[in-house]
Length: 175
Image (cartoon, rainbow, N blue to C red; front, side, top):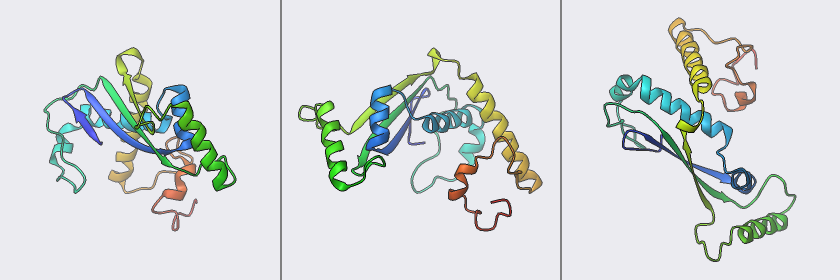
């Protein structure tokens, strides 16, 4: 978690490339994976705070301070940092894409054109399906840890697209 304001606002800072940034600006919604991530943080804060408080502070953060959290808002701060977008074939095209985006955002009058803040009011949506999925996945992970077993690759909670980033992809027999 990047920040928590009071007991009800979760703040997540994300960097992204121009192609994602343009989609975020057009849709005025957070990326799906970012929304899932912050809802997991919300779930942990609201359901496992005691365990979180037992963890030693890390170099990059601290332990939550409040005794109770009721996250009502999630604020995403997107920072566009990348010049080269996946949809272009050359540096020249990337520069041109950046110029177009900067013009659309009227960057001459907005020195922070590369930052977009989105605040999601959770009271305006039904997040129960997200919470239920997270709760079930969390239980599935805890069961794997407690039984010292690797979840099967056909588990509904395994995303094979993430295998590339897995620390065990070189030794996994199912990879």
